[in-house]
Amino acid sequence: MIHLLDDISISVNVAVALRDKNRAPLTNKELTGLLREGNVPVGCPEVRVQHNVLVNNGRTWLRNHILASSFPGASSDQDLGSLYGILPTPGAPTKTYRVRWIAVGIGGALQTTTPPGVGSFIEERSVTGLENPYSVSGTGVATEWMKQVLPVGSLTDLDLLPDSTTARFRGIFAIGEIAYPGSTDKDSVSYGTDVPISEAGLFTSQATYDSAPTGGVSTVADGLIAYNIFRTISVTPNFELEIAWDLRF
Image 1 (tube, rainbow, N blue to C red):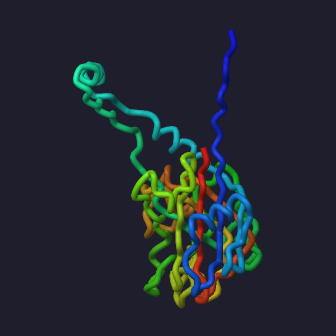
Image 2 (tube, rainbow, N blue to C red; image 1 turned 120 degrees about the horizontal axis):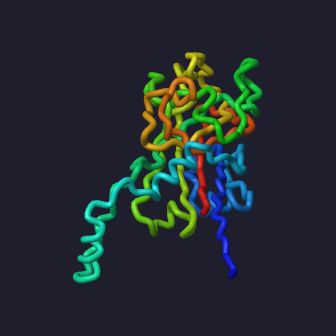
Image 3 (cartoon, rainbow, N blue to C red; image 1 turned 135 degrees about the horizontal axis):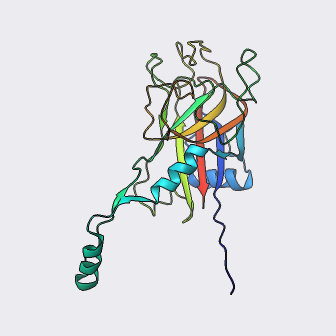
């Protein structure tokens, strides 16, 4: 007897681009070229593109999304479906959280600007949060820590989805949302209008935007699903920061 084994793997890639404030957001084609071919778009003086880690919480979260906690009326549903063409009740999922947030920070082992001892996190599956998240706000009040990803209105929306086997999550940090007077890290240290960003995290909707997403502060088990560290990018008021996360199945 021949057994065919299909080893399903997930390729997780992320692109971080510092974009001139006078140019339009990157197109889907530009992002795909950057992520897959390393083509740097015009007007982006700093880019970081690399594979990164789907952390343990992310792997558990994906597993839970294809499991059902119950199937109410499963047998009767199947009978109705075969007789009348009625779709069966889908069942209750074990988790309903969706990917919603991207957070950035000044931690990670590739950080070269912050004081000694800050940059120690590496990309490993056990990471549960950012090492040193940085506030995201355009109001001058450092209470927000995450940027909502762009929603996908349709599963055939090619403006946001590059192909049929890739999920793309985009976060655009506009002018003044990272580098502004009064912005701080988790320890209330401000880098004003020149912020050395060096880590990013992809979070589900279970995480809250007004809680600093660190392993020590956030107790959300399913919050972080992917983590990335990169060489420092200095964000100033003249630039916007775009992050695109691809999960390819």
